[in-house]
Image 1 (tube, rainbow, N blue to C red):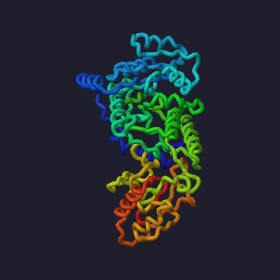
Image 2: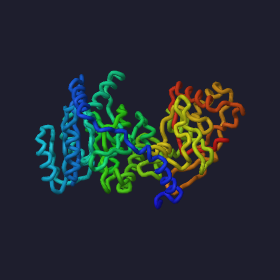
Image 3: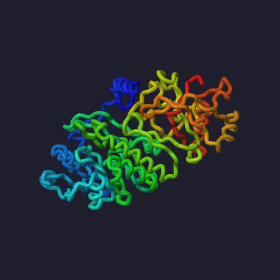
Image 4: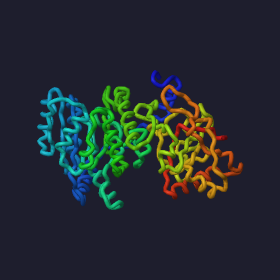
Amino acid sequence: MKRNGIRAGINEISESFSIRKLRGSDYVMPTERDLEVFKKLADNLTYRPLISIVVPAYNTDPFGFEGMLDSVLTQAYDNLELIIADASDDKAILRAICDSKSDKRIKYLGLSENKGISENTNAALEEATGDYIALLDHDDLLTPDAFLRIIENIISYKKRCSKEPDVIYSDEDKTGWDGKSFTERNSKPDFDPELLLNNNYICHLTVMKSGLLKKLRFKPELDGAQDFDLLLRAVREGATFSHVPQILYHWRTSPGSSASNTEAKLYAYEAGVKALSEHAEALGIKADVYNLRNVGYYEFRYKEDIFSQRKDLGAVGGRVVSEPHRGKITGGIMNADGTVLYEGLPVGYTGYFHRAVCQQSAQALDIRCIRLNPELWDEFYKFTGVKYSEHRTPGTVSMRPHENGRPPQEGEKIFDVKSLPEDADIKKLSLELSKRIRELGYGMLYYPSWQVKSHE
């Protein structure tokens, strides 16, 4: 509450109780029979690239480290190498654990000093010889079929696209220190560069082509958000991304860890602001980046007219609510079939993994809170018979900490829905317009800090 204010704090507590059931994980430990099936599938793969797993370690708890090791060495897909870059004060501890495994796939690298997670990982990259490189934390766990599913995804992607993906990522969850109980499944969407501007939703498990990762490397000045920065730079390189919609990674929690206590790594989220700011500058976009009230989540706020900077966008749309402060979401971002993604979510709540307050790509947008690229104004008239006009939205709000609301800026006008006939079918028109925008090759952006009441 100290960070976000009393109202935001109350909303967070209330929401945590209301979505408790969403915090579970449906992951089930595989049986011996399952493991046999995994192994047979892995042995019969038509493509068997070498995967290098790089693990920077520093004063790691031996129990957590050994569990991580075992989760790699028992993989169904076994064409692997595991590179440990150990910067611990006493290197004999982890070295002894590695030696006890008697597995030639382990490459132990004792570092002369601890230079931070980025430089330590870069040292491991130097030793990697695989076609792909996987990133793994020193005490987390992989599912037994993790790399089997990664290779299956690469094969499937290549059949569809005639090339291999540059980056593959999976769903994840959290596990207790014993590695036997699972919570908070993170079911991720397929690659969305707009959502990535708000949060590193890709996170774990991430596997990248070796050549690309070795070219980009990690930037030590962004320690704490080094993975986030890496992905943003991969986007700028034109990398292709592929998603495995299965849990392949268990993020292990322990007292004080970032998995169980996000406040313990606030410095990382400030590094995230810097990474996003550098990303905007590299793309020639004028924008400010702010921390949202949920740490690790950001608002990417364009300084100038969004369409003058984002020629690829055909429309930007916000959300429609029954009441500005205590109501619920009634419209906004929709699937192509008209399903409102966050319908019924109380105002002030952030939704599943806080995505309801994140900018993201949209299949359809509600015309009651939408703004069109001027290049589409004539098309809009041809499509609807109504001349496109705008007005400054009175309901624009901000998601920034300590800021419950702010007046709309000049560039935050929206379509004047009152110019439509009173009997206009709003949902039908919204879906048809959105479909036309997609057909013309434009993207659409959900911008949840724009908000209007449903009767407007």
